[in-house]
Length: 567
Image (cartoon, rainbow, N blue to C red):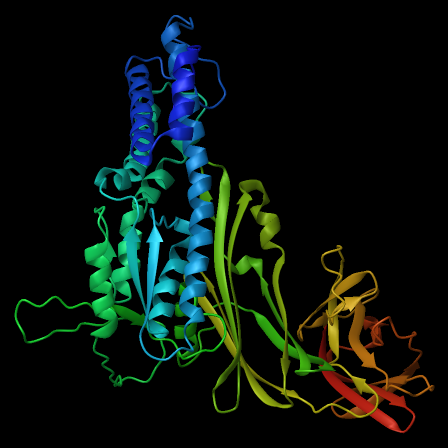
């Protein structure tokens, strides 16, 4: 509301506008102040006395700091504060509102018929980081037969919705002008670094435009630029009572995740059609809504043959019996070297982005479980090489009834658009009345646990760490090379006798040895997580099988796993 000043009357006036003034005067004063600041910085830049917004001292051609330089510097400080505050506010507001709208759309899916939602707002800003989630809101609303009607509560003051766009475009223009007229070697300010981001954000900065997209994309309309909502509300009431429901069956059968536009035409002249505009070709899924970043992943899983441009490993392991089924764990591992990091020379960082989708299906193809994650990464350029030497792990637990299932996983590198997918089968055995055993896996490493990681239900929790399985990757032979196996024993309740463990090793179906091992006492949850380590040098290169056999009283449980020793 007020530039830096020693004038107490001006400060009192600004405070009064903020605390007692109406929205129109508030917005007008804010726009006027920003325009004044921008003009001051532009004049300073044109005169060769631009403020150094990167931390260097202000200099004129003669090396003297004058009053104009001080005023320009203070103006730039104010602009930077305004821009940074507005950016953070827009990001926070965008994420909060978009997820709320998603919940509203999804929550009404089970209700029959067409549902109408009146959305009262002073503007809906969609940040770049939430643009895909916003598209998912429209798609989810159309799937749930929900129509949004947006009512702009700012009333009749059309220029206010363009203020944010003008602000961001002005910010980009000033920063670009300062950069072009600056001397070589001057420190670069934040505004100059963010010039492209500001210009891109300005496209979606009109809060009224996003409200219109939400409404028209779901079969409703936007009521704006008016202080009298009696007419729009009457029209909404008529829409609720006078609409047509049409359905058709598409001729194609593939769920390729692509955008499908709906065009509805009527023969009657001078008629305005108000209908849903589009949908995404994805299979019907219960649970969380389909996100926009999942669409190309779903399309890849419908490709024959499956794309396998780079390597990734995935598996499903089973653990304990729970109230809702057998506890299972999905594990996905992919080397980071498969992802392209794009350098940003101005900010001295490199960025990567990749997405993952995993589906658990019945033998008939019905989707029973769905997991996904979109992963943006940013690292300083000198640390990219270290990142690419590591691996990305994805781990989720879920419950399944006994039976055979299909696991489909797919990953996409957003910078190169390369995709890798695989399809494997796994089985969940019925619970044992006596002693039972989890899947057996070889160990990649054991990570140290933090207080947040110490989840009592985490099947990979082991002592003070967390086990990371290898998912069938080969183990190198040689002196000192470790070969470790991990599994969890679930003793039978009510038996005083302790479980007895035996590991047996086979090669080409022939037994090559066995080892009885002593198990520790059960933990506070009654389970026995166990890691057995054997020197890899004891095995010649080749394919092997390990069998873990648990006996307790008259009950026995056995699990098997393959492992490969390479030179």
